[in-house]
Length: 193
Image 1 (cartoon, rainbow, N blue to C red):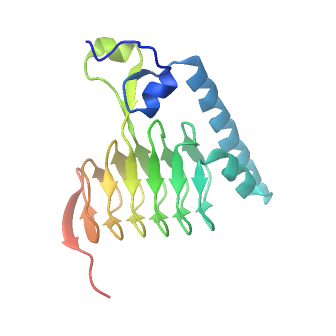
Image 2: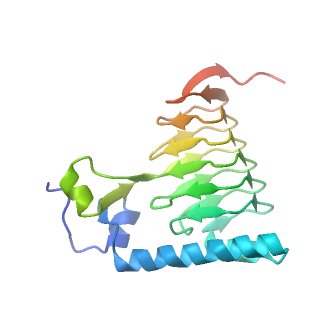
Image 3: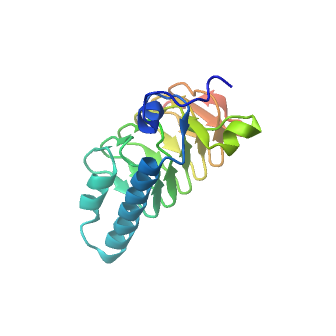
């Protein structure tokens, strides 16, 4: 179990490097609570008609112009998420940003979509000790993720692609295709206009 050990780096530094880190670190827990509080404030402001976008600016690391996110929104930290201009995200979006999550411009993300960079060790003992890691997720420009899509750690989805509702994306999806299923597989190129 040499890969599961504490070294001179903080848990945040190990997390940001994509290495194994201890998920129950008090500093990370405090940052997670900050993100949960901002998410709740965003939901309240959105439903009351207040300036919800100002709260979203505090929560999301990089936020393009004219992004709309329907609450509720669930993130681990928010600061490791980048969302491109013109992207629309529907209700119940979950983005567990223990690694970078990059969403391109003009994307359409359906309700109940989950972007899941975290991974955990398979052996029982390191899981019990709260070791975890994360691998970035990248969603290209003009991608449509249907309702209930789950994207797992380390996946890239290419520009313009469509992922059908309920798909579980375990491997990269190239640009300009339609993918469906569990696990998601490419079924055809995008139709021409």
